[in-house]
Length: 199
Image (cartoon, rainbow, N blue to C red; front, side, top):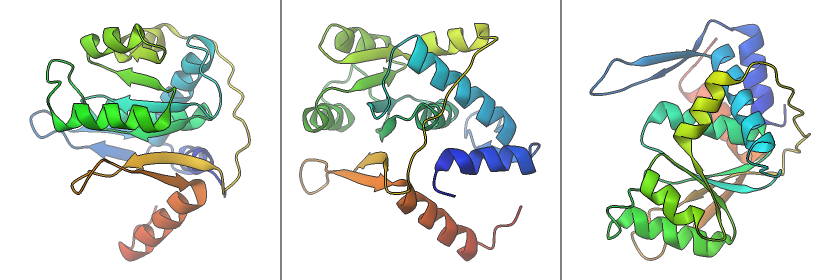
């Protein structure tokens, strides 16, 4: 197995009723089966590619508040053949925050990116720049309306870039750590063995 999406496809096929639990401290926990995660992620990938014309290998900064939204967007980007860039939730109203500075620094390092945010003011700000900005609530509305769709998932090699994760920047400006599919899958394998996780 060389790709993360193949891992999700296998889980959805072999254990479709099992899945992940998103722990919400202030609300009820959310359970999402592997098959639900796969199906919603594929729809998001289709929306990104068809409606927003996001190209394969595009770098997409994910900056949303809820963990479940982050998870769906992460897998949607992977299914679309894009490179998710992991960032904390950023609020435009708090431009002096560390998170906002990290976002600006990341964009300077990466160049042209697509930003997906659930902060309407941040969306409006970057929409007017040369970057592409997508309002997360619009994706969710399109997701609910989407019925028939066809998604071609491009073949990715194990050495292809999978995700970019920015460090905390505690000793300076954040650095983008580039992880390929092999890096992620190797870490998952080690974690699975160490924690004695079974299906």
